[in-house]
Image 1: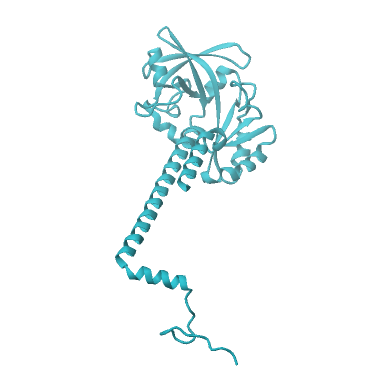
Image 2: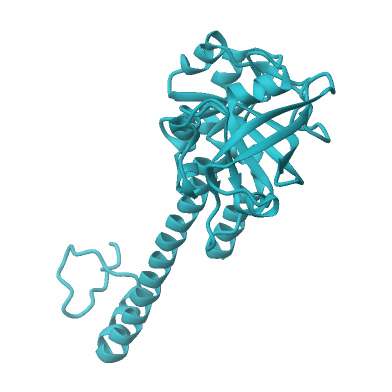
Length: 291
């Protein structure tokens, strides 16, 4: 005959018994309800603060990422192999900028717009004053589709798309240094692809930069892509192609697809590759928050 199973007083037959520690914990919680309420309130308050900080930080990171992508780098970029690793800007490491090559890129599902650029050093001259600067030839139409926030930095004048062929947008510091005002003429001097000095007269149509938002590069300017190709004698070529996509989070997924479309002679990079300090900053913030 087996030994009868003991029953706790008041415990119905057939009801599962709670573990002893759990019964003790529940009893202690209910014994001092005010203390328990304060403890639970503190836990919920701490959790609420943590969630709020995480939401705020996520929004801040998204804004920072979008500012860089939509005003400078674009989601993806295409260069000749070796261009990004070269010590200085080399016009010899160029790539096609014709409609056929751009069509290969825009045919990739998820790609919206592809805009060619040419970065090159030069000198701006006006009022018997010459200043060294960095210039960028951009497609007046598609550049502001890929990087729409560039237009927000034009604090005076207008964009290149609304002006004639030989026009320029100059930074505040460069315009101030050579003493030129909106509507006046300035001369761009630079060495072409073969190293021969060339020059072209431009109309200063827009000032880039705002007083409350300092820019990392003080002396630089934008000119239409056709102007840059003409003064550099490059023909329908560029030094980089900047790409906008449907969703910024898909940049890493689309990178190999664009790479397949352009071929092995070119390298495709994402905004993380071009601006690694932004990705590193976001990663450090997430690590600190997790700790």
